[in-house]
Length: 155
Length: 423
Image (cartoon, rainbow over all chains, first blue to last red; front, side, top):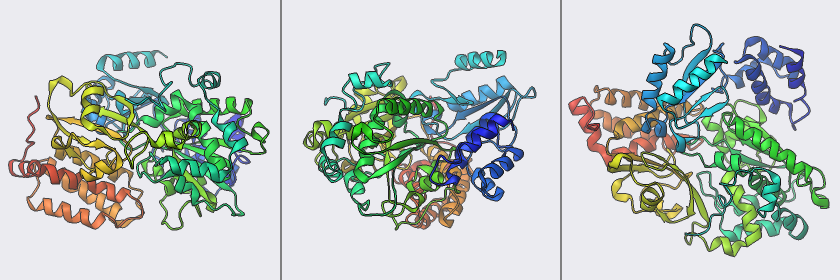
């Protein structure tokens, strides 16, 4: 963990009526930095915020937004809840698996993409929808997916 | 059609900036409230307006604020529930993205009404863009003197913090939300004590939805009578209906309470996609009962939907055409609740697991006729027997599809395949 990130987490300390409230903001900072909640980062959060490590794990394991293992540079989260399914999400997930040559839950060998399915992303009016890291991509089609993957692969 | 209230300026690209918001009449309710009205008067106006919570339960907002003790020695908190996660719902996201100051103004007034000096906007983790937009809006509001110490010289202090969640549906349940803010594992809590007495950090708190709070400034400016004149006798005001599924024009539509479902689907939604026939509608998010096409003339308000055998919920209208298999739909929703069960109450934790297994074997053509009774028996043992409403919610897709589409279950079991021929 860089000094800068440590300071960011430490600065959360006086911000709330009780220090434990800082735990979710700290997870977001760690996730931005590492792409997942790595054991070393969790220990650091415990140390900096003075929250027992067990409690840090107890809270972290509840939230699905933060991966517990190393993921690709880009995490693709495709919604497969009802409104997206009614709008063809299943076929698009199959298309993504085909294009990336991986199954849902896997990472491409070059470490660029992790493909996952998630519950409702709250964007059902523009279904089907997926997130790549923290960005939404809506009204998805095969063509759009082609463009998105091409753009990200070049970055 | 009645004029739009919340979405009046939603299509103006700069509405999220404070100057545009002010130019369009924004931040006029805050000085009026802080300089001319007592907290009791504000609560009274909201009570008289008939505003009811827009998150799903429909509890009268003014009454909720009235439960927060005035004489408490503890600090009080106003919590904005922006953990929009009920499948089918996407209204709060648009409200925060395009008109964040409308929400902030609502929070300022509501905090004043209950005597809170700190407010959290608990926003689902995925809404990173909206969280940033709110942060920017809060900065603007501080700079103009609408937030911070001694707001507009009235002596009222308020700080608003944006708190991002981590992808857990259950955190939209108010007691789980409180635990999540406190930074402990966000299990649900038994009520009583209600949040009004012992909420965030065991202090008196009010939890209100984004759409609910966004209504508040308009009620202050235009009056309780004006608001109460919109909608139906018991469901006042407008509601943002989130139309999704197999319609030509999905999206958010702000319409008066009591608008017929058919009008929403046909006139606003442009009818069913690909000229297919309507089969069923979930009218208020996946925690509400599926309605068959025969109920399409129901009016969209709290009372009419209960009478029709469902609920208004969050106003998330999911439309399904003739090609949709209702058994598969129910199975998908059970899987959702199984995934999101927090695991605290045994009936929900174990029940969602078993419902999901039984539904799976029916969908896969391995069901037994007695599975139908087994499903109903399990539902009976979950419904009403858990701390939070998630337990009830998981039974609803099954019991309501069995009520209206039992023959599809029987077909699946007898013929070991889906009755729906996909065109």
